[in-house]
Image (cartoon, rainbow over all chains, first blue to last red; front, side, top):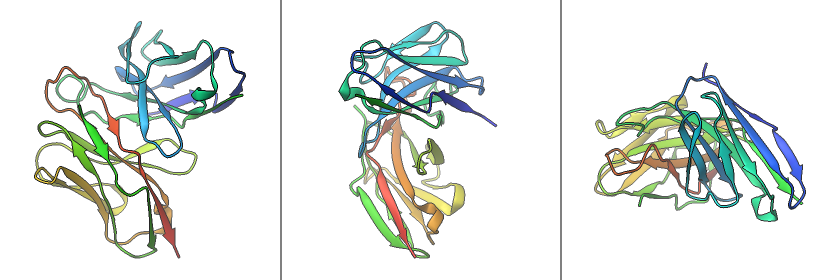
Length: 117
Length: 117
């Protein structure tokens, strides 16, 4: 069965510190995504990638970097963590789907709860 | 730009009662549409998806949704709610034509469903 795993599942970080969130997929999918979820809101796209060694900005990339060293792994990096980055972060993957990547089901990981103090 | 509105932040129903969760989308043309469910402390799971064709789509666990182009809606329905349906439900839209975009999912804010005994 398709699987997306995330580590750590929860983390407490200090303001100004560096945080790395990791994601691993065994779906053999080309696309990977990072979202953040804030209480009472839907998911918002931070970064995505459609091939190893390449990442693209999503809707809210400021304050975040991403890294895709292989097809299976996708990391989200907060170089200088801030209070406003306290949220739950979800990783997802999908295949190319129809029409060059559109309409494909995304498979989500369990999420990482990040608290910045 | 695509967008999704879920007008009901919270819905409470009695177990065994019928359910409708509303979703309105904004997109030029006919999009791909999705309903995802998020159980407590878990990632999102796909309930059902719509690709242009039959406007009524069947999903898992007795859920179905109906696409209406004239109303720009994609409401989720279930004939008889079970206590295990207690979760947050997200509607999402993805572009279906070459719009310069990729498989970008835009999520609504979610509807929190509570089931009373």
